[in-house]
Length: 432
Figure 1 (cartoon, rainbow, N blue to C red):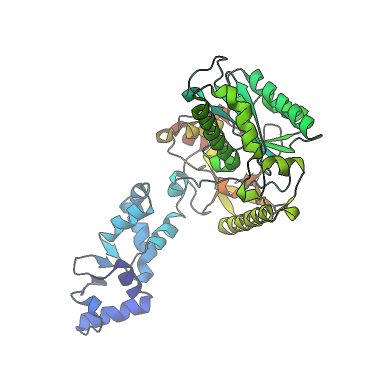
Figure 2: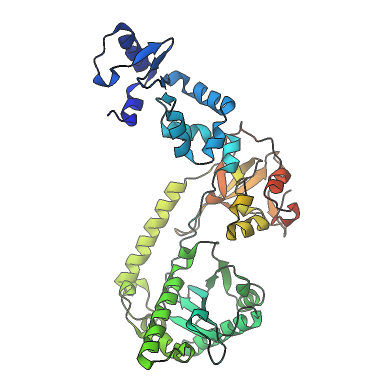
């Protein structure tokens, strides 16, 4: 059986198509793959009655399918589904050509699945550069005498040194902020002057408000991970898993599920245990302030992360001044982000802004672990896009979609929000 890929390559370029057409019409066929092909009018027809599209008519054919057959509706199921549908009636159209054609169509652009950003690569180059924190829900382990349900876990991302605190609930925001304050005091007592420059958490309500204000008062920068991006705080997630394992071991050894009584001992085990990936125990690396130059394994981790970040930049590419883009709706409207987080995707038919915006500034990365950011103007060339504090908004590559300037969509942002059942008053940005 002749493969479709083989046939799609056989009839290109146009000169080859014309040559094969003459051979079939004259009955002189020197390629066994063309047996039973025939010519009808201007086109070559396959044995199963599909038309072979001439290379010079590719765009014209796709435009006709788009306007008359409504293929953009089929494309909503994915490029592969659309290509398979086209192959039922035509050959000599590749999936890459279909993708390139649709990528220039405004309706497809605003409804296509948005690019998922895997998040910024966070690599700590020395102790206390980055800490990460998370809440571990222990309710599945059963109730405690003290009614504790959560553990606040804070990890130095360089050494993996771990701090823990018991919490009765996470709805009382004072509990979480007070526990964090205790951990900062403990770190200072153990290792004089030790505190993070940056602390990373998810955007749960327990890490907002008082918690964020505490970090601001301590001159600690607070970063949030993106929704559904656990890899951005992967080291903390890993320590959470290890903590549960150690607590289970204590429960089995002592024949008691009083996990809250074993938390301090379990934390001590984590900090004193040798970790192969960093070539030492967390307490030694953190307390002695061992940097990568003195630890070959840590040096390799940093180098590997640098290479990964460089590859990510290469895959993303760089936008340039004057290019037209659409903005991911999730990067603009808070209610949209909330619905994405709640996975209410059926309510979100529009993924990118119908309006086009112009790239008018590029902010290059200051270090290998940062990414290019972009300044945008509205299509009419008015003021920069600014936030509620009148500060310029910088967009990541993954928040933007390169658009065809000629393919604007006859839909306003208001209409897009209405389709998504989102109130326009819920904007994060002030559109100048």
